[in-house]
Amino acid sequence: MKNSIKPWKTCKDTIVFRSKWLEVHQDHVLLPNLVEIKDFYSIQIPDAVMIAAIDPEGNILLKSEYRQALKQTLVELPAGMIDEKEEPLEAAKRELLEETGYRSNQWIELGKSYDSSSKLRNTMHLFLALQCQKSQEPSFDRTEWIQSQKVPLNKAVEMVMDNTICCNSSAHTILKVEKMLETCYCVKKEEKR
Image (cartoon, rainbow, N blue to C red):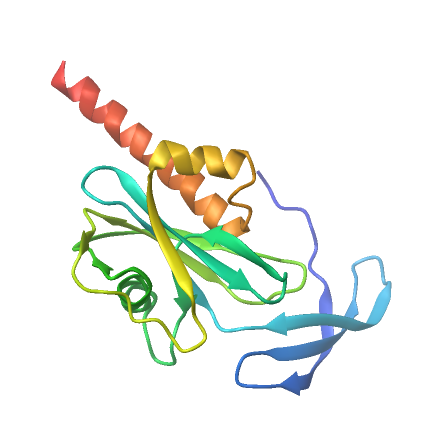
């Protein structure tokens, strides 16, 4: 599909607030139709990783964690920020171990996701970890209280569809992994005939 959408022109990008966790940007932009917006705000947060971790029995690891911004506990996949000078895969392995105590030697990069593309500037790097095995107890940050659970992948898909799992990147990753593994399984079945 040919992209005929013209980009906005950024006349000025000013950081109006900065902390360890985020930057708030105020952009002065000019749209292709010459409409001018002098106060388009967006937020830069660190890039992050999300992991669909599948154990040898075909279960996926989920976590429940309280999210202050929404003032509720949400069901998500293991995830976390990429540290400075850390590669996404390295961060994914670290976050999976920290949040679940699981490791994997089989990693597949699934691409990128953008949670709120109209206001957030960060990238979520998506990974699939296969044959995950528990190797230690989780080691949570001092701000984390996480409950983990394992469910069959098809149950996780149901949880996405009934909105039990309603976080965009988690839902996106679960559906992508389910389709990908279903396709791989079908190919393997056809090869056996």
